[in-house]
Length: 305
Image 1 (cartoon, rainbow, N blue to C red):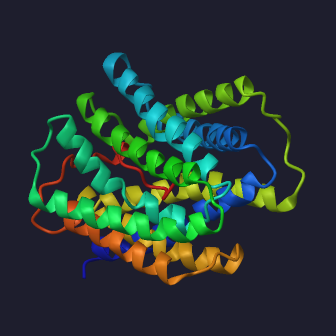
Image 2 (cartoon, rainbow, N blue to C red):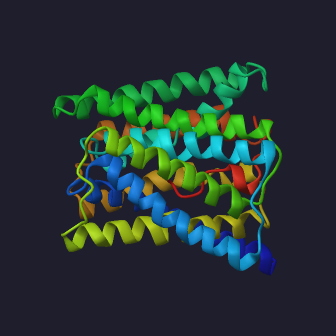
């Protein structure tokens, strides 16, 4: 194995492990902060770090359609998606949520068909049916534990917002990945903070040490370090190969959530999760399939949400 390939593999595995903690961090953040405020605070801080990196690298802000595309990417990828995901994770356990977010590659393919960027394929139909069966099986336990169906649907809709961002951004000029995410996080944070104020959420400073630890993890590790590791991976791998992280991360999250947040690992969660991951693999990641959008580094989600 060449040095570059070895470095990419190590970065991929470390990224998957670190990203596996993101949904758990959101759960802990939600215990003290209102969801919109917690999400807005996270991405405002993360955007500040990436804007500093932009300045250090002397990267220029995009203009015209490139700027519009970056802002639109942020509205879907950070604003709408995380408003829904933070809301869902108030009641949905992290392992279930992360498994639902593994639908992103398949959702991207389906939306690409809707936008006429791809043709309908049998593999996509089979993958969708497998994934839907998995979601139904996993949701059964949650609904029996009085988890609102709206919370589960919010996470699923968040996954489709991620996918919509990936499809839409292909229509705009390419932008450096650091710039894309810095601008995107800034616009997403603006939407989240505005929504928090409009909803009358208390914009309080966290008092609990566990909340600060969760926010610190989400900002520094989950939003910046994981993204930079993803760039290392993309130096040697295609984005479609790197997308296998969506299939690996849920296993990490389930283990961490069982340990840190007492999430019950039920047979329905395991079997349903395997069906979802099988559906994503068959419908969107199986070798030989043409990806709906071979994402540039700047247009692919990399933090495991």
